[in-house]
Length: 206
Image (cartoon, rainbow, N blue to C red; front, side, top):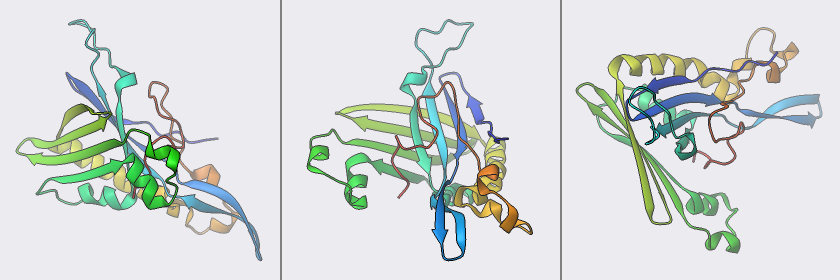
């Protein structure tokens, strides 16, 4: 039986913010000691910002899921907001720049419009402002969500509990050799969201 985690969702008047873990990727490996499964790509924490549909009526909220902004944070980046945030922190993704760094940049990509994503977390007296910005083809979209101090404490606890699964350490235990890691890994899913389960349509955390 697969374990499918729910999202930690914050609903606001103008937008929503969902936090959801993405599984580490496991693949079969055959070595001198036999077959095994190894982590070939670490997991991440997915943040999805969704604006309110402008056509929503006063008594009914509808969210524009096709206009969601999404960013995936690595285990190391997650540590930045698990610690006490006294100053602003930011995470930036650049589509073509990421391709160049990974060595997969090609001439075909040189003609593609660059897309930049930026997540900034700013501490304020009431809690934390999560500001997500995406710039593509000269157009910018920005969504901001206020996270209270109590909600931040809940997020820290939830995130801390899934960190081992993001790097594949959740399989460590007294019966590790007899366990199937695939039975214990998380599988990301969201029927309303525009992203896919393995996160390949997003920039890999650098």
